Length: 316
Image 1 (tube, rainbow, N blue to C red):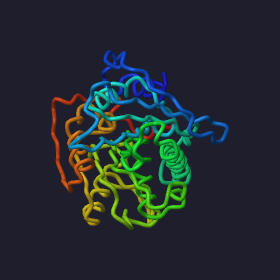
Image 2 (cartoon, one colour):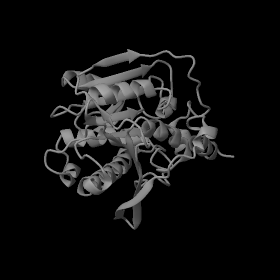
Image 3 (tube, rainbow, N blue to C red):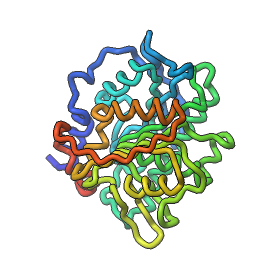
């Protein structure tokens, strides 16, 4: 069996190593069609807070968490069973979770690197556009769906993390795609697990202060760079570079760095749940500029079999 087929199976079936708990029988989500693009119907699943869960913090409604799945822009699904335990944790703590479809712009691509940057950029932009369409749908139907448009936190794993960060970068730097959203709109926060930003203007810079940002990344990630790759003004910059840009902008952020870890941090939502909850409660809901820059060595967190995967494994 080819390496890609093996990687696909492992990514989709073992991403959290919690297959048994992934069969959680909790409440079914409500599903909505939010857009149709390129003959593709795009849906979102909305998981409401669990009955009796605390939906407010200090008298203020908790934000909704809008999730963008991972899979290298070639695979993945909004309702992948391995994400469900994390969704259930959030809803049990009073958060609404929204998981969305998007167009897979790299499906069928056989090679990925600097020479294919235009293809990568197009794939990222497709997701950002679909994310903004989903966001607009939530804004337009906020009352019916119980959504506060000013309290939406976007989150993603791997390709989803790249897309979430790129979306915030687009908003803060006046990118054309942001014109889909109401003037002055921004998200309440971003949570990115092994993400990066693609820039054609050299080093990552935010023209205006972004919303609170949570970054988690392994320093030895072979799929999404922790530092950067690039040529001349082209940059594909991971958590190390993004955190530096956020610090320079005086932003509200948390960055968790995992020395020697690979791409497994893309799937660390449950192991890092305590840190995520503190970010949501303090930086987002509380409005506090609680800056965290932590280096974490945690031998108790096991490394999945796919963690050492490279671009050659994914695109072939």
